[in-house]
Picture: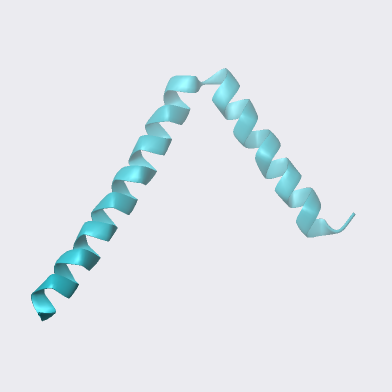
Length: 52
């Protein structure tokens, strides 16, 4: 196994551990990430709309 694959498997295991042990905390993190991505997408859309 190469190092990249091992690190990927460890990251997935850590993510699953976090979701199982602290589901509400994990949900909060996901909501924060999705909110940030939504805000970024809205900013990009507003930028392109202001060009036309």
